[in-house]
Length: 288
Image (cartoon, rainbow, N blue to C red):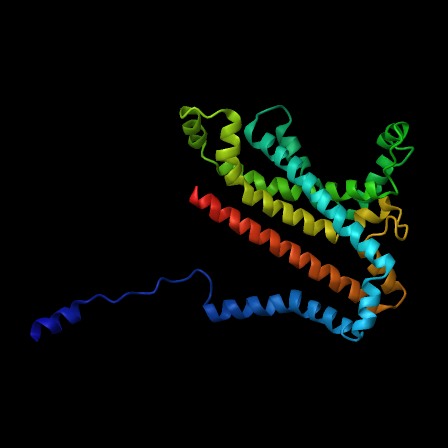
C-alpha cells in the first residue's frame, strides 16, 4: 500500500500549454459576433426582404426574360473568365517562379495592379483601350472584332480582375515544391512532360482550384470595371449586378433582393462543389 501511495504521489501532473491568444470563450465570442455583424445579419436581411414576396411573385421576377439573360451573362462569362485565368494564371505563376529574366520583379509587381486599381478606373482604361478608336480596338476592328460595348468586353474585364487570384494562389505552392522530387523522377527515367503531369501537377491542382474559385467568385459580383465596357443593353450585355442596381433605383427593393438571392445561392452551390473537388484532389494527392 505504501508503494502504491508513493507511486501515485510521484506521478507528474500534465500542464496545459498556454495559448498565444486569449481564452477559447473570448476568442469564439468575438469571432461569432464579428461574423454575425459582417456576414450573417446582412444576408439575413436579404432573405427577409425577399420573404415579402409570394413564391409566384418571386418566381416571376427571377424567371423573367431580362433576369434570365442577366444570370446567363454573369455566370457564363464568369465561368469562362475563370477558366482562362486558370490556364494563363498558372503559366504566369510558373514563369515567375521557375525562370530568371530581366524585369521579372517588375512583372511580379504588375500582377497585383488589379488588386490596387479602383474598379471604375480599370473599366474606363479598358474601354478606352478596346474602343473602336482605341489602340487595340482599332486594330481588332480591322479584323471585324468588336470588344467594347459587347459581351466580349465584359469577358476582357472579368479576366483582368481575376488573374491575380490564380497567380497569387499558385505561386507560393510552386515556391515550396521540393526540387528533389523532379530530380528523382528524372533519375527514374521520366520525361519532362511526365514529371510535370505526374509529379508537379497533382501537387498544384488544389491551389489551381482555389484560385479558380476565387477568380470565379470575384467575377460573378464584379460591377465597377464591367459597366463602362459592357454597353449595358438589356438582354444583350446587361449583367445581374447592374440589373440589381436598376431595380434599386426604381425602388423595387424586393425585386432586387430576389435577384440577389438567386445569385447568392447559385454562387454558394458552385463554390461548394469546387471546394469538394479541391478536398478530393488534396486527399488524392496525399495518397500518391
